[in-house]
Image (cartoon, rainbow, N blue to C red; front, side):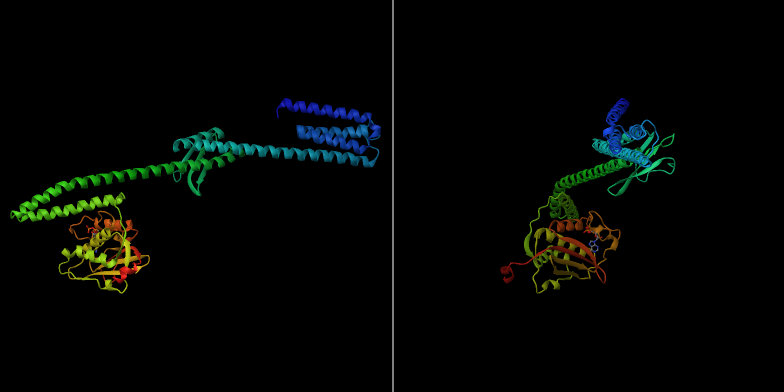
Length: 461
Ligand code: ADP
């Protein structure tokens, strides 16, 4: 309240008090002492409600004296001749003073509450403004500026967690928590020492939440930028891979054609050139396939087929490599026909890769076994060998492109792409491909593809 307004209220209420007193004195014969006391009490309450505790107390004391002097016999003296009149005076004074105090306290509480509400309003708009800064770093800078301005502290720093050093003994450190996690620290220091009153401390605690959000935003932006950089590098790698492998194909076809011509002329070494050109060609097409699979550019055409047909087709594909190798497919002749909905061509390719590996990585004297079973909702085809097996720590890595474990035989003619392609082809059809250890030595590769019931007429055929 301004000084002039307070002075005006004090003068106004003193005038009213005086006027009412003159009126009451004039009508003294018609009023009883209780009426007078109540009228003064009313004036004290109204006065203190409008101008505060100071005026309330002044009016209460003045009323006390006036009642005694003007309205209690003997009139015109401050003495009282009836014992009970003291009681009236005392009751008036106590009621007036207590009521004035209570009114003042309620007024102060209301003022504090409205100040708090204003503070919260200011703070939330401040927080929203600072957080909406275009760049995450600008939001951080804006919040530090606001804190410095509001608290008058010389040094204010927002730091990501774990970077606060031990030399910060004199500084005040406030942990910044966002989404239930400490994301950083608010560090405040001043050469003259920190003098923070309760409203400033409240402000700091409230703004520290916005500061935590700002720090978290900086972190998220950095993570997003990093992920984007990785994605771009990945896209670039795919593009380079696709274009290099594509460009390699043409010269390879020419080399192969020339080698065949020369071989027909009786040059034996030309056959070796042709073989190596074939090998390179396979690698190049594997590379192309891998980059297409990674880019999601391989179409999958699921059709109902039996697992038996699928295994038969794959065995047919590797028949050239089989020579005298024994392949046991006893389990295939189970009483139940196992069928699934899968892309036949892609699935033959998966099994061919697995069979070729089983042949490559197991001794010629051992048999290769093929199992078929149904584990709803999948059909499972297992290719098992008695070869070198795969160490446990390599079991997932062998499915990564170009990865060949150190234990792998040096030259098997592959580039480490077969399993990577096979797994991608399996997952593209809603299936999976994993390696399992085989009891007694060797490996089992398990291919899972979506199973389905065969139509009745197919079973009757
Ligand atoms: P590549 O055969 O060209 O090296 P693959 O992706 O087909 O590439 O296989 C990756 C690696 O997994 C192989 O180098 C080999 O070490 C291991 N591997 C694959 N199949 C078998 C298997 N049946 N037995 C043992 N190791 C295998």
